Image (cartoon, rainbow over all chains, first blue to last red; front, side, top):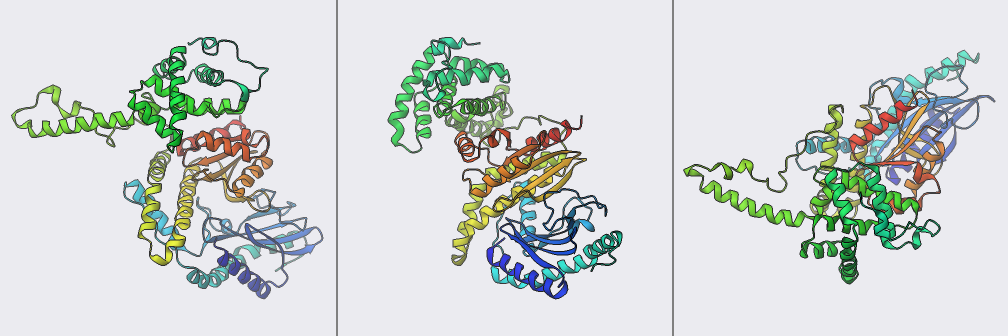
Length: 175
Length: 360
């Protein structure tokens, strides 16, 4: 992802998280992830929302998870949703989309459309064209609506899981 | 089988470090490894044996002198090829020349294995030998050009009835219209075969398409178009490889999986079946090795348990030099763990096999 876009994406997520989910705090920033926001439910239970850029594309993915420690459980690959598990995480889009290709939040869908066109062209032995990606200004304008869409999906698919987890652990609805 | 002691004049000096071996000793060791593998077609194996016979080695000595003389012509390899063709090199000499180019950079045991593997793959790649095709390309092109002219004449004169021996259907095809051999592995899914066809075209046309994109770009976008197009070509190949990996049934695949911290913390694919994992990092080329790639492979190596597989999927097949550079750039033990593939069919087969193995 282009640097100015990533920067804007981080700022927008930070602002929207503070506005919509003030109980979450930014806990981690790394070069290849946009940010991890977490909330401590008990000293042995933390819930997380992670935003990760896709390196070669102007796209990002969102992950949700919990852990018995204060760090995002990326080293655990347990995707099976069991509320007794000490750790769990999954891509947010995997909570509603069961198909082969994982949906991602694209800031430049033109690039994907052009890529699909190139693939078709190659199979027909025709020239594959590489049109310019949209300029930074265009993508910067698209950041906010895309972040709001991602957080709506979090509200619809992520929050119920955290509430079920809270109920399962005797904490009631947590969000 | 050639008696390799004839080549070296003595047993290989195991007490002497490989970097101190003579060129003939290194060559004998590489040729020995290739021939012992038994993977070569008999005709190619015969030519390889001929290439390392003392008389051919003597001729190669002269060729090496020519190479040294041609060193001023960049690239030296091409100058040497041209020299060989000008001298009407035989197929055995051509193989000897290729051996020279690979073997001369051998420094240690790993290099010996790597050179043997690279050459074996090239020599065994098809019945006619892609290697020979490559090195005799100029001569063949000349011959085919002559054939094309003949065919035109035949067409012009065809009105009065065509003699059977001049039927164009029986003449060699012109370059670029060679009939491809039938698919080697009919068990591959159709989608993987289609992806392989796309892969071939992607690699073949990469430079031309990059040039076209730069030529067609507006003045203000010129500074960024090259980087952007290269990045897109990488993303195209990544996407194609994802589609191939999706053809493996019964696996769980995670794309863009975090496996570490800092630069190179995310790897392209992690496939799991049961307790077995396969880590795949995809690159268009490894001509340049950024720190990110090194870290990705190192992280995958660190994360992989016994029985797991780490794969570097490179669209453009790495050269021996690139492999050496990769080995030197990686921490000890990582390169040996990595399997390098350069086709969609190889990728599919290797991942499928790796995921099956532990299940048994």
